[in-house]
Image (cartoon, rainbow, N blue to C red):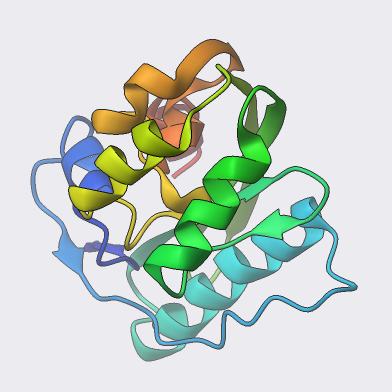
Length: 182
């Protein structure tokens, strides 16, 4: 059975490689629009399910692994649409605690398992200059909440409670446990 990672994320690819050496990458093209009525855990779970379903329909004999990550404070913070949007997101998290949720789905034609990993992240109070210096590095562009904890934004983080790798976007320990079911 071939394993397919339904993601184009270089971080997910790197982390899955800790568990499986040989797998195929096939990103799922789905509508990821966030609606004001979406609840964070429901939204992220739905996105991971939809990604898995799209690829699983095309390759029903294979094991599809799909994942989605969101950041939430008083609302869902998806990927920024611009540098100004990224700055707004980071300012909204400055000196506060926010939640990060990553949903994971493993699916074949006959079996599907899904889990949710989470973490609480507290940022130090951030100055606009700190944020601007970070944004100049363009690390924010493809990341939920406009930051990657494993990159330059690591200096923003005062405290993490929960699954660190859910913040990175792929809870590798949880995925390892789920793989045992297949």
